[in-house]
Length: 202
Image (cartoon, rainbow, N blue to C red):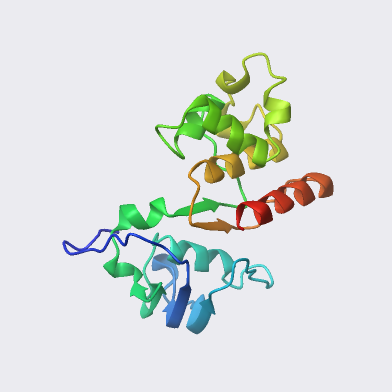
């Protein structure tokens, strides 16, 4: 994806997302429509997409992030077609946490800095506390400098997910997309993180 030469970088973001007659099929399976003339408007502080596996929930998030563009129709942010917005600016406004946490074979610190390259130690600790991750990280020998292994293999699924959520919160995004992001957590941690996210969103 690329930005148009005249792409917008709005000064403010309200966060109203609207799908108008959006149809989409992945490039490798053009005969299989994932979305077919979807119309949807999200203009509240907290919204949830609910549906069976494979119904297109993750696809909606990927289209909002402009990993793909619709085959038909258009998606708008605050009334502006996403394709008319500067792509770097758009993604800077969004925190995205996938169902399968993505960590690289480096330290927790370096993985966090991928969310915000100029983040301070204090910024990282604050974000990780909000994600209920700092309690276990602070007990590690090397703390933020702990090596996570290939794809985070040195950590549990729940630990990886909490770091991924912390990385998204580090950006202080205007829009936070959680794609079943608490699926690897136990009910207590899930409840604590969701309460935190509600407070952050106010």
